Every structure is written in structure tokens, then in C-alpha cells.
Image (cartoon, rainbow, N blue to C red; front, side, top):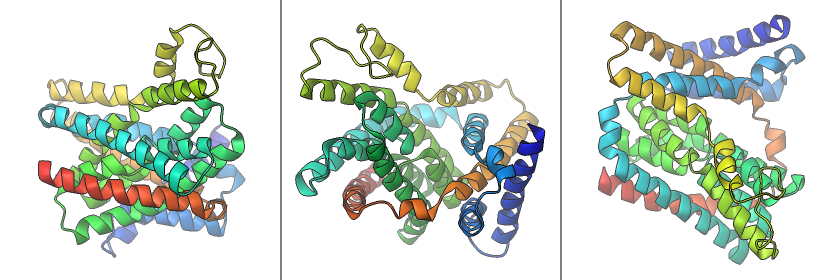
Length: 340
């Protein structure tokens, strides 16, 4: 294990350290530079066999960084903004899914299941949502790959574009963080873009994004019920996590199976820290651990972005998601600015 994992981990840390060094020379946040370096290395030279194991753990490092970052989040701010944030999250998720579905079916005539996968990936949490919804509606692998490639294309571009747009428009830290958390797709790019703007923006972006992630199970069940109705099977079946049949209680099991468990860890650490169980030194240590975990995660994320894979995306799904993102992002930016 150590022979394959440690050298790869050293590679990730080296990319991150170089990203930090470059950030002292050019005015770009080190997380963005780290992703760009990983992308450059991964596409020019590929990922060495001895580094594959470590690179594959980048999502775990991201989740670790999110969990321990809970120690630096002020609970009173979350409680104060909670109801408004939850309403915004639900409104954005519903609006995004409806807009993408309408564009896919009525404007661009994309196959129904592919449109649903694009809508879920755009509205909830990127590729994770694509996979979860694909499982609940029994979509075939080609449609999953099609939708996932489209989502990844926008993940790779929005993490660079959003901070530029935010600075160009002179958005406040809170407005940018909430806006990014509401409208960007996957957790990694949202985190990178948020912290590239500022630490405060990063915290808000992550809070809002975690709230969106928590809805994945509900959306998956809603899609499962819809597709079961369209095939006239709803009377005799209820969809399970493997596409089979079972009693009504399976809905709760599916909610738990699809729920992102690291969100609970984040909430637990945030509550413990805000109740005063951690001293300043411990909070600082957790903050440093979060920084290093993010650095490692984004080095791995950059290495795994393969431009060749993104070229397989057809123009129709790209136009669907681009149009939907432009509509939802513009509307929600006005709404967030009015509220915050």
C-alpha cells in the first residue's frame, strides 16, 4: 500500500506546493493554480501508474477538508441566514431542473433520460447526481457518459470563470459565495472558486453547496417515480437503489444511501467548535489541516481532468447546459444581490 500510495501523495503535495509558490508571483489564488498545474501535467504526461492510487483519493481529501473546515464557520451566521438560504437552495434546484428539462425536450430535442441526467447534474451536485439519478431511472452507460462529460466540461471552465466574473462585477464576498454555491455544479469546483475569491466567499459557497447536495436523494426518488409512471409500472413497483422492487420503506433507505455523509461530519465539527469545546490552537490546527487537504484534493482533481474525454461531448448537451446555466445564474445573481 505504502509503495503505491506514498509516492503518489508526494506528487499531489508537490503540485500543491508549486501552486502556492507560483501564487506568490502572479495574482491568482493558489488553489486555482494547483488545479491548472495538475491539468497541465495530467494532459501532457498522463498519470503515472505509481500515482494512480493516491490521485484516486482526491475526493476523500476534499471531504476531509470540508469536514474539518466546519471548525472555522460561525454558527450564528448560518442560523441567521438559514431559512433564506434553504429557500434559495430549493428554488434554485427546482428552477435549474425545470429549465434544463424544458430546453432538452422542447428546444434541442435531446433524448429524455439524457436530458434528465443533465438537469440533475446541473441542479444538484455534478457527476455524483448524474450517477445517482442514472441508477434510479436505469439509464444506460452511454447516456451516463454523455451527461457526465458535459458536466465535467462545465466544472473545468466555471471554476476559472466564476472568480473572474465575480471580481469584474465587484460582487461582495457573501454575494459571490452564495451565488457560486447556488449555481455551480460540483463540490470541488465550487470550493475552489469560492476560496479563490476570498475565505469568506469560500465558506458561504461551501455551506450553500452542501445544502444543495443534501437534496440528491429526494430528487433521485422524484425522478424514479416519474419514470416509473411513464412506463406504467408505478402501481406494482417502487424503485430500489439497484432498480429492483420492494416495499414503500425503501424510499427512506434510498435517501440515506444517496445522502452525502460527510455533510454530517461538517455539521458536527461546526457545532462542537461553536459550543466552545475547541480552543483557538485546536481551531487553527483544523484550519491548517483543511488547507492542506484542499491543496491535495485539487492537485488530484486537476490531474484527473482529461481534455480528450471532454471532446466527446456533443454540441447539443453543451448548448442545453450553457443556456440553462446562463438563465439560472443571471436570475439568481439578481435575487442574491437583492437579499444580501
